[in-house]
Image (tube, rainbow, N blue to C red; front, side, top):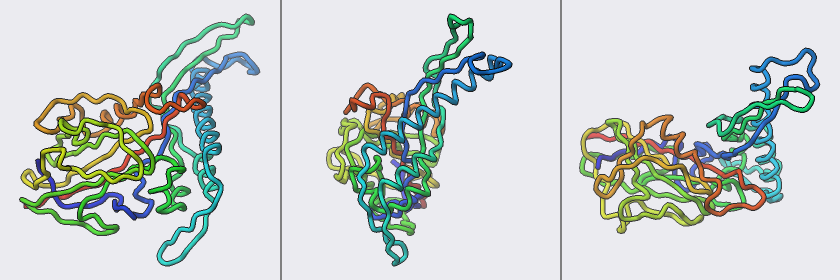
Length: 308
């Protein structure tokens, strides 16, 4: 396998700054409803009614996540040091602000249909899978507390054996690379290696280490002795990328093809793979009784540069 120098997109290391949080979010399934006549003079068009139902679903999803975060968050303060200056932040207030101003991205339409009420009002209902993305600027205030505290939103990170904050680590032909994986609470994950030639491979789980469930507060090494392979730098050289997709529920299925100890990913390295892993199985894993249609999600990436 080909691998090399680290250029961390997010300065990935154990004590990396929070700008390394490539993606802390929530996957939610929520329905929205709107009617053409109810309270509207003149009646809305069908297109506007469908659009309003979509908006209602997204609003409800954001509100559900905000309520969940509020109910689960501790209310003490954390001290964050930045360039030698210490600042104290109220955890609950920071998280509520981040999720109150979240962006909502539509991932898929799960159900859609119209019906007429007894008053002959035409209504439209739509159920969406969406991703609720908190404001990163707010989360940055919590600094490295996001890396380890299991009471905070899921945060899973990657770094290399030469990965230190703000530095580039050079790997040359013939050198071996070690990757490290760690989350702040239990999670399901897929670690995807994107090669310089455009191909992608799933390196964890793999043919020898098949588990996709990992413990929080534990650092996992890739490759480990269990994996029976090494990351040795070889051609083709260039920019390569490692991404971990993680969730508190099982991730969406990805089409894989066995290739020795790892799996070749039968999908492009962009939006298709991103969408597939976000098809989180909300009815699986550690299901929360009060939140059956939501799941914390984390995406984190580092970039490697291979050289002869």
